[in-house]
Each structure stands twice: as C-alpha cells, then as structure tokens.
Amino acid sequence: MNPFEYRGDALFAERVPVSRVAEQFGTPCYVYSRAALADAFLAYDGAFAARAHLICYAAKANPSLAILNLFAQLGSGFDIVSGGELKRVIAAGGEPGRTVFSGVGKSEEEIRFALSAGVLCFNVESESELYRIERIARESGRRAPVSLRVNPDVDPKTHRYISTGLKENKFGVAFGDALRLYRSAHRSPHLRVLGIGCHIGSQLIEVAPFVDAAKKVLHLADRLAGEGIAVEHLDLGGGLGIRYADEAPPSPQVYVSALLETVGDRPQRILLEPGRSLVGNAGVLLTRIEYLKHGEAKNFAVVDAAMNDLMRPALYEAYHEILPAARVAAPAAVYDVVGPVCESGDFLAHERRLAVREGDLLAVLSAGAYGMSMSSNYNTRPRAAEVMIDGDAIHLVRARERVEDLFAGERLLP
Image 1 (cartoon, rainbow, N blue to C red):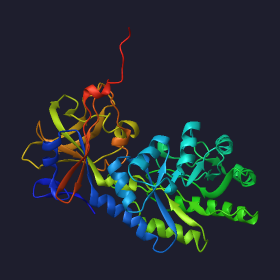
Image 2 (cartoon, rainbow, N blue to C red):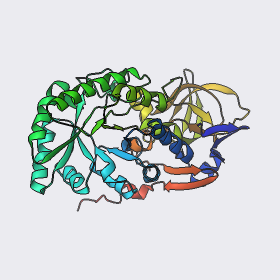
Image 3 (cartoon, helix red, strand yellow):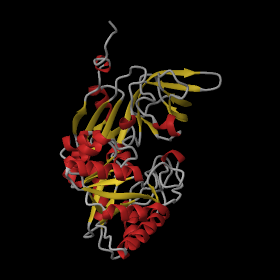
Image 4 (cartoon, rainbow, N blue to C red):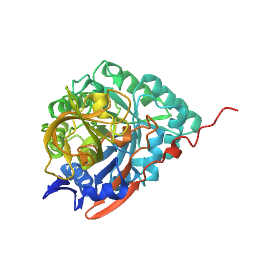
C-alpha cells in the first residue's frame, strides 16, 4: 500500500493531512503509517504459508518502541546488534527467546545480559567471539545457543557501505573457517549449535544474490549433517530493497518463494531479518522551508531539517523523493534542499524541481528506515518528534527533545 498520497492538493498520511501533524507537533517530525507497517510484515509472514519460519525484524532500521511493539503483537522476532537494542525489544514487549543477537563487536557485558535474558541465538561473527561466548557461558553455568554468521563472499551489487557479505567486509566468519569452528562449538559442553546464518548486504533489488548465498549456506549445512552436527534453523539474512526513486525490487512473496525453492524440503526452520523493507516506505520526514535562497549558480530551499535528522543523503548520497505537503500556485524552480547545519554536506536533496514558497511544508519520503535511528544532536539540535498515524488517529510516540535535555548530564569544571 501507499499510505502517503495526495487527496486533491493536500498530501495525506492514511486519512490525516500531514499539515495537521506539523501544526500539532511542529517540524522536523517523523510520521509513520501503522497500516503500512502491518501490511509489510504480513506480506513476509504470509509468503511462508505453513513453512516453519520466524521473521526477525532488524531493529537497527528503526528501534521506536511503538514500531517494535506493533511487530511483536504481529508475532515478529527481532534481530539486534547491541545490548541497548535488546533492552528496547524487551521494553516494547518483544520476546528475547525470539531474538537473534548479531554484530561484530559484542562486549562481555552485552553477552552476559543477552545470555541471562535468554536470547534465541548468538550470531557469532569471529573465532574470538565464539570463545568469549563459551567462556562466559561456562562462568555463568549456562549453555549458550550459537549460530555462525558465515561470510559467503557473494557480491550483493549494492552501495559499498552497506555490503556485508564480501571477503573484504568486517562481517561474519570466513566460509573456509566455518567447518572447523562448528566442530569446536559442537564439542563444547557450554555451547549449543543451533543454526547457520548469513547476511550479504542491504538495499538489494535482485533475488539472485540471495539465492547464491543460500546455496552456500545449504552446502555447509549438508557438510555439518554429514558429521553429525544437525542445525535447527537456517538464517538467510535480510536486505531486500525498497523503492526510493525508480528501483523495482522484488516483492516479499517473490523473494521468499525463491528462497523456499532453493531450500527445498529440508526440515530446518527458516529465519529472515528484514529491516528497511518493513519500515522504509512506511515513514516520511516533515520539514518546513525557512528560506528560498536564489543564487547565480544554484537555488537553495533552506529547511528546518538537516543531516542530523536524516543522515542518509550526506552519508550515502542517498536519494529521497520530496513532495510539497500542499500543491500551490508558485513559480517552479530547481533547488538544492539543504539544512541549517554548518556543513557543506548538509543536504537532503540536490537539483529538485519544486513549486514552493517560504514557509511551505515538505515531506521527505521513504524515511522510515535509518532516519530517526541514525539521527544525532549535532549543532545542539534536539531530535525530532515521532508520530504514528492509525487511520484518522494521530499518536505521538516520541516527544521532541528539548535543548535542555541535551546537556542535562554535563558538568562544569570546579
């Protein structure tokens, strides 16, 4: 579904004009559609039909408690990469026993907390981490569930910053080392080998790389079974892309069907870790034009949102479509949409043709993933409010920060 569309000349979120949200809660402001979030999750879940599976939402895409809680109510598991994300999952009503703990730098404190909380599995990303988990499990008198995240060296054909499955990436255990480490884990009385995992990257718009990676995982699973090491699940990662501009990613149904065809009638439960494709198109960032600045070389629409609110354009040169909240009779011109942060890299868009006036409200689309979750307080800017739309209801799910909150924990020197 497209929850953000024009009705007449006004842009709506479900049944609410986005201008009403801005009037009530100010800008910058993130706005999410509950219906779009639910539909995205159910598209994945339904694609598996009766096949044993667990959808583990990648919390890093957007860890809002309201979003985590919504997915938990729908039956989601979670993929986390920090102890803080695990605490968020628990606070939102998620189950640790349906949560996989990924990430290359798990600290001792995080491992102890996750082990005591009863996470489903640690996705182990190095030999050193495996032995650290084993030691902590021994000291705790527990048996730690583990899965190796293997690096299949498959090119995801995506931005180099969000590629995670190549030899040169920091993620995962080298495929050639996996069998030896599985043998070691299988021998340990303090570790329980639970599965095999992989993740090759984000914003993938083709099925073929997923299938290539899955085939390598299945080959390893067969090798392990031949040695009497049975795994209970196959974690085939996430990374399915969304439409930002003119991309045409496969649907969850096509993606899941291709994976199930590859896996065949093997008995293991399938885990997937979607993030962006669940939340990306379900959110927008509202921002208001402060100034229209016309120059000799460029025109600038200076808005009140900045790179601290939405980092993706500055970090990846990522494209986000931008629409006026109300279509007005104004002269159209080509603008760079920029923020007030004191950096030349502070931009939301380059060279967009817009018919706008000073004071107009803009909506930055496809901002539900890696928007609020990557935001910061650079230039002592409070982070935005977050609002959930449910039909014609408006729910504030995170209040805007106050400047005083940002330095409340600081102290002057004596």
